[in-house]
Length: 589
Image (cartoon, rainbow, N blue to C red):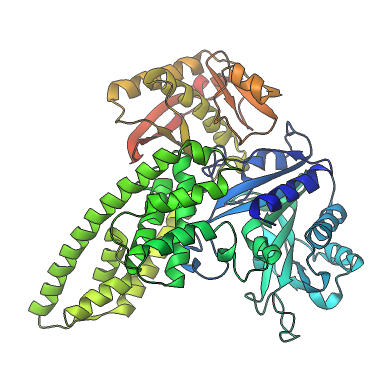
């Protein structure tokens, strides 16, 4: 069974069980500003998990491309990836644990033919926020999983969500496959994770986490995730995901270019190329902050590892041409954007080559300074600066130091790296607080304002403007959009005035459910293509704005207050960012 067949088998299995097949969301969340990237299929469904009716109904399924960078340093081992596909199902206040767990077991054992005796499960152990999940454990026992293959684990292991700092969440029950049934009988998924591969996660979303704690959701939801890349080796009978049909083409192309072999470097390049191809296809370009920075980091990390394999000159565009056919049947956008993807990769490789040369000059200067001082150790903070600013892996800096008769202060490098990571975590905690899952009056007003801003930018700058991402806290909005050049002060003033005109007009905000074709014909803004289901919600603000969205919004624009643009800046090639605030309700001005 190849990857395309497995993807289709999953969706068809649940479609036959009355699940509507919905399109996938963008890797850059359109209406969930609490994260940089879509890390799970539930991101675009947050409003519906909180109680809004979904246009397609109460049972849903899809295949969702996801990107997670928190484990980027682990990529290269047999299981970790940055880019992956999560096949998912949702019950929005419909069925509950018996159906969800029963169908998971049936699909794995009957449709895929996995051995029931090699399946293990974990359940939530309970704490002060929620009770032990004895209900799920009893269902598993009824399905044939004996008690010795059921493990209860704490929240850090068996609780999912929220995706950001607030929102839907709940206990989960994870399914693992024993890759070595002849191993020690006392091992479990908790004691030997490499032996037990997680293949499916059933999340029972009963709670809504807010700043003050947990509260019960208005409806009980089921959110399940089935890792395509994790399960594919099991059905194809290969030892790791890198031997499957999703990775073989890009690895073959890489090995034809590389004079040397190194398994870890090859895997990093394969994963990062797949991730970069998808992000570039969605319109992102390498930059210095947020999503564009991640694109740049992935590309440059792949290039660095290519250098370790002895590859000279640009090579990622060639690998992209191997990646695209492996995914294009399910994601046609990749083929449509093929030329732009390759051009962006070549351009970034060229920029990075120049950066490496500048880094080599910096290294030479620092090495000379060390020798002039009569020392023999290159400081760790220098190695970190070379890594963070110029993309030098610490191994390369160590090799260059050895050639100069110097040692590298590895402990100092590690300390600088840890300090940087902690600073980044603190920054992220501040950046991603709030979000639509919070549903406060402030975030609702600001989200509605992004619709007005989007429409105003298109009117002032042109119809080429399209949303590339957003972030909302209770204090301000941040809106990223496609535009090839700096927005002039005059243009910003025109946009600001246009938005405030709509606010002062106190326009009604209404919505209607319709087919995707009807939404397109009505002139609604949306990233049309394969990412939407057959039914969508279109929110209209008077005659000024029409946009596909899931909410929430105010009832009239007069509730917004005065709109003010605080800053406009570049975030990458062909992408700009506007930061704006709402200053008090209109009637108080």
